[in-house]
Image (tube, rainbow, N blue to C red; front, side, top):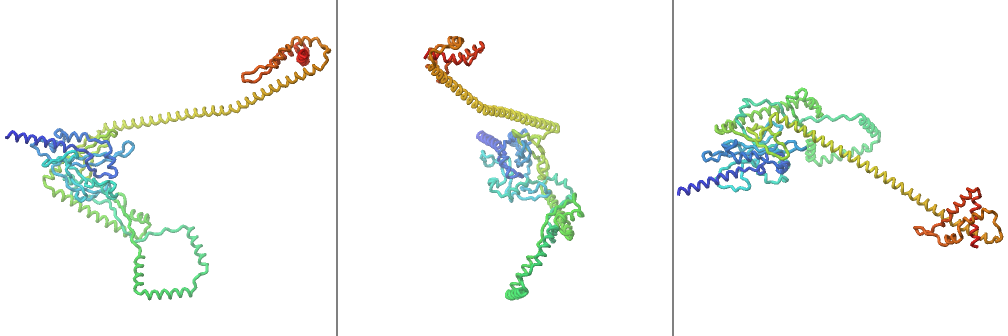
Length: 562
């Protein structure tokens, strides 16, 4: 029986340990950002950030700095962790990037259920209850884990109940208010450093209601002259209303006043009250480290076009503002002292020994280690441990050298790319120029080809015309020789010789009847012309008359045919 009970207990402890490990499986996407611009939160979740060192410590707490808090041994009870997440803006990859960080508070006493609202520039803050601002320390349960009863909570995280609301439906004033929230705590070791008295007030800012009206600016001389000339011109013009009309109007006004009675008097009083000048408020910011009363007041009055009579009123307002702020600072100082003294001895001891761990993520494109800062906020101060550790001085120097080398290499690559692009453009320009020249030459050669073709056709026509004229002359010479007497004798012996060397009548007849065709289908001229030219050249060489011999050579064959 005892063995079965032991087995059940062992099984229960094993399940408990498994559930503890599952509850420590922290996913940073499940956490709420605090003190971050609301419109930038979706962009942060989209980035590929991981927290490998935090995952390792939570998975194996016995080896890391959280061994006491997350002890799984039955002898030690341990205590839960308190986690919140913020973001640190950095400039990387040519743009501003918000790098998330996770703060883990290792303390047996939980942090107070309060939250602070303060501006980055302001030294004071408003401390609010978390319930009023819909914040709270909530047990962390991963989405894929079903929480069982009677299981100790491993992690509490600072959660905003309004996170489920769509960001689009949050008004701008609420978004701006959320940006200046920060986790709050009062550590005894920090309060002890404040001393017994609060710091002296050196700066005030307040709204001052001035009773005096601003001085109107003087009009330019040209405008005054124009107005004087216009007024003189209007004064010279004849008045349209006569004295009788004015008297009648006055009588009518008196009658109306009598009828109105008391009502009219009330209206006049109301109008007089409205006509009184209203006080105008001015924002006054005075810093003792920069300004002096003797210099500040005259400059302020001059800048706002106020009369010198307002100097005393402004001086009194400055004194009053400093008195009120000193009283407020003293009251806050006393409240802080009371808050720390009101803690139990155990809580004060736990806060003194509290460990604050700050974890930075890893990113595939951002070297985050050079941006690591141990500062958390004005209440928690610096973190006890930072993961990964910040760079040393030598490592920072080496990183700067590498960054300079990288920038120089990138600049050189950009210059080389620009040179290549300019060369490509020049080559393209030359190619376009050559193509344009060839195109221009081609367009210029086309009309030349047309002209040459026209000249060739004209020369051909002239040759055809000359051949036709020679044939007609030969026919006319044959007819003339037929009419001559047959008994005419040869005048010269040279003519007989030329007649013997001339071609036969049969050959000439064949040449005339069947002229040869060219390749294009056109009739070619008889080939007797070159032979005739050679005969004429022979006559010239002999010293005879080439023209006479030519005529005789043409005429005598016709005689034979006749």
